[in-house]
Length: 156
Image (cartoon, rainbow, N blue to C red; front, top):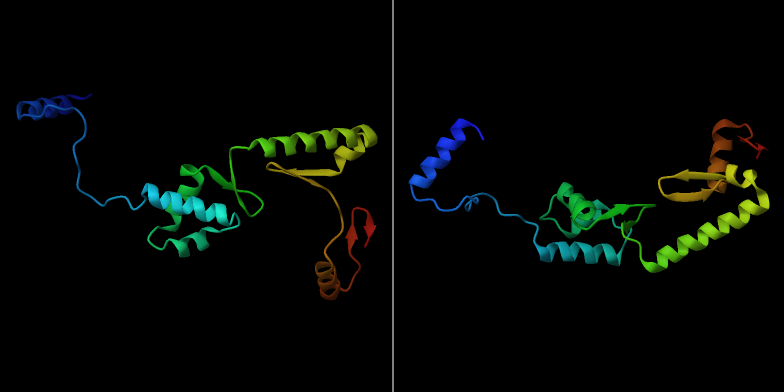
């Protein structure tokens, strides 16, 4: 503590202050109450695909940045595959992951390294690599460029 702070605290205690804790301050009260946090959590539970924009429409008194902070930090959720998911895994989700791991091991034993090369990962989502494109995407590319599409497997 610097010298100025020591003098300030001595003056405060000489003037009758008895506590070292902060006193009440004036200022804008927090909009975020336990009741509103619970309502936000219920809204996310009802529709896990909710966006911050949709939550903002439901709770116009709360800023978008505070809504995002509430969902990520206070409630501990994150956006994964266009849906808010709790960071804590339930027992069922843990079992699902174990089963998926066993299936991967089974397929690895069957196909070896070729199976591993067919997997693309990103974040915590595992997706098997396929080179097929949706019909609408394929058609629009053909119209736009007029040449056959090429993939790592050859012409589509």
